[in-house]
Image (cartoon, rainbow, N blue to C red; front, top):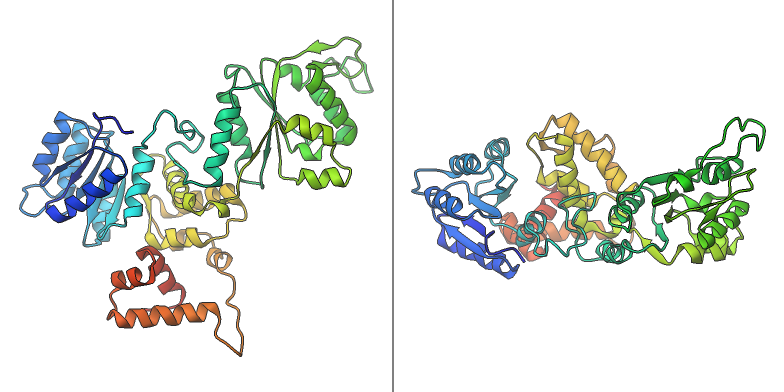
Length: 442
């Protein structure tokens, strides 16, 4: 849990809103302190540094408004994370807030899931035991689901010497998982050596992995150590292991069993202490059935089999990842995603997984030059990729047509009030805004 010395500070002149925020944060397990003015908040923060501040932009009778309080808090502590909250949705205020160092900018009524998302990212409850700590996407706490399950298994497997087999589609981050296993493995100070089994022709891959004695074949003008010996005392990453020739698979199996390598053309072998991590986007069970992969090698590698899920199977992680990647790409400049942009990112199929998301976000940051990333900053054709053509049928309305009709009817019943409409439909306001634009509803 968050330490007693690091409470969450809520600053708002409306007592009812403060109580709601305090209750929501306490339900999440945090200690909370509250202030009704900017001056009171500055005093509290000076006496007891908060882990995070939720700060209202308009502070009623206070001599300091939210933006002035933000600047003063940052002068006291330049690293203090502050989230501004407003009921007015002023875009200029949002831009000014980001320029002044605000971590994020929320609109009232605040979505409680947004509060939880920010707490998980900035002040996770279990900072020591959480397997995400130190993972390549630092600060992103994945939602419960297949990715978190994989990380928990990775945390258990990493300290051992047994081989790891990392499966997953292209772009899901298999190499990052391998790097995490090395960094938290038995030899984190040793070398991490990579061999791309798909990029090296089969006749050369054996020499690349096991080394060559001088004169072993035409062109072997000097002796080489090989990647196994280079990785001695560390980790050897065999990327795309499913592309390896069968003949070489048998030799690899022998090395894994004996921990002993013999260079091509050599008579003397060498003992190696290497942790092997293999990755592939192939279905190895099908490859075994087709006779393209050795079953005994599979079982030797798959002592711990880790499946990195595609991004479409972890939709709750899309926006936290996008926000983090945007901050990385901005290199210290203030940047945030507009609600409409987040809705489009959430709806996209992400066939290229995290790699595709990184490319899209980095491009948007460059085009926008920081600031607020709008839908216009996304790549050309992005909407078409996100939304397949609506099916049509002469006999009955499609699901999309029925959804559009339901939204129109609910809007009319609520006299155009979008907040009540979103509540009645069971949607977040951001999801409703996206659907309104999708269906051309003004």
